[in-house]
Length: 223
Image 1 (cartoon, rainbow, N blue to C red):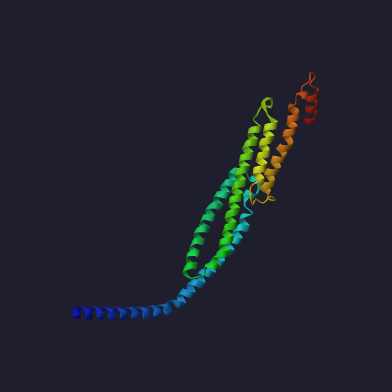
Image 2: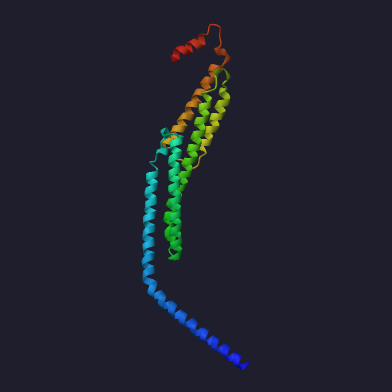
């Protein structure tokens, strides 16, 4: 039994010496790699700053894309928005890499600027996608109105539908109401809001008289 205890003590002493040697080695290695680690950390910070600036420039460039012009149309705008979405996905992947290195080199707070710029781009893209979805919905509805025969048209019902479309437009949060895209759709909705009450008057029974003088006057006015 005594021999076993001695051997155990020797093993414990040996393990303790090995542990102390490892600690000394770790300190030495830490000193040796301190300079390369700092260099890599500084490089990552520099690249992060460039990435943050790039996102800022990208946002300015994005604001000039064709989906900010109403005349572009839904199909072409969706195509451009799809390309921007793909670019955003790449930005998110790149940002995640910076987050990883920021945790490794302990400069996590430095990612806040890039995160803010990236979120601005993401939110703007989502807003414009919602706007163009609504534009397409409105244009399809208006196209259907034009196919309804005059005899069966219901201006009152159509007017209520147009009011709902206008409310849905104004309910889109964050949209730039001064943008050409927003103004374009808003103007088109206004035209229908002006036209439908006139259409109601034309549908009035008082327009139907034996001599047809009321419709004759309308024809003369419109040429």
